[in-house]
Image (cartoon, rainbow over all chains, first blue to last red; front, side):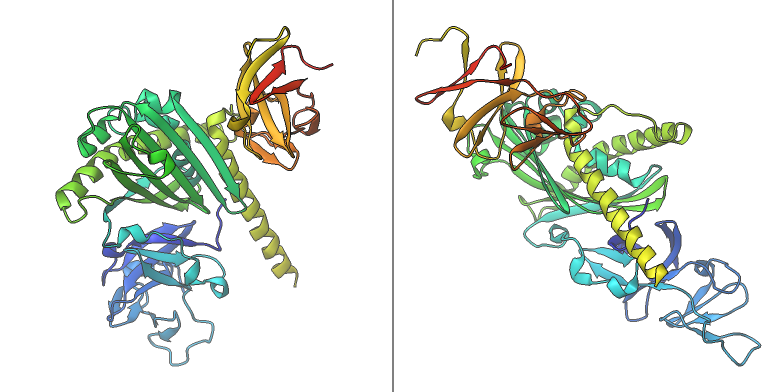
Length: 347
Length: 109
């Protein structure tokens, strides 16, 4: 299941230059590159003539030439030259996609181009806000994108998968959790009061005693998870909104389906303390990355089982509340998108 | 405040918020308290479908929706309103003494 009429992260801005870059997104091969002026461009990575990936071709200025028979395409996808043939058929066109560069990521619209409104891009300003330090990365995940969304909406797994970094038992056993929902949004709020900080928080925050820790997960469809996370010394007022002497971070996640069983996982960690010190940024990033690599192992192991037993029955527990609400939103949006497609097809 | 025979003190009024469940224990039984239009209600907190804690679900008008599979129950009566659950929740008498909330240790018939 893919939702097409949404903006997705196609690549980090730094990944894309004048070299043709192929990536499969929502089951479609895409080639990304920058124009001579620097603006990012995305084509379907398939020549409309005989299907060779255009990424095997080359750029000549802002013209893309196919490696097979030398057809050339302009920036709007229109064929501008067919070697040995003067007349160019009006339908000779490669498919292109709207692309926007924002928050150090390149965003792509894989749905109906008429609906592509850049103001609908999900806010990730922490990635380039001078008041925050941030570092991000990309992971290729051999699992369905919804397994990654599930993972970020149920953080009880930190106590078990990530006990050497960001998890400890307090998180699963001594938390109060609230789930709030809106038509297109789920917020899971978890407070862990007067408990030991996990290893990463000791390293990064220098805590000596007990802490009040929060995890406020904001899910926006199709697969954006922005986590407000941190801790302060216990009893200093964080639950009432006074965050002092602690650490305040954002864990930022954007997942883009590659196929039904593989995903592109763009993530970053931002912090609002010691923001100009790359050593701090790197130290935090390294800790979180260790945890995320542990997650990637979990996803692919889940997917391997699901490949053998598709749609098995599953046990739901209370911690799944956020996961279930998010999956319901995604199913509804998918139904709406399919219904709109059928209306268009009938017209 | 003395304990009354057949009643158990489970919470104070200030712990309740409109539109939110307050989970409590009646002996070993998980129950949930709700305040709706100035009235306090007490019903079982375990969904009769698959054991989810209803107090972690969603209050919609006068009903509580299970967080996992969307069964709904009437908060005032415990009546099951929608599938996948089919069995009603037990409900309990509530007695308010000043700030204290007492719940009957035996469910209402």
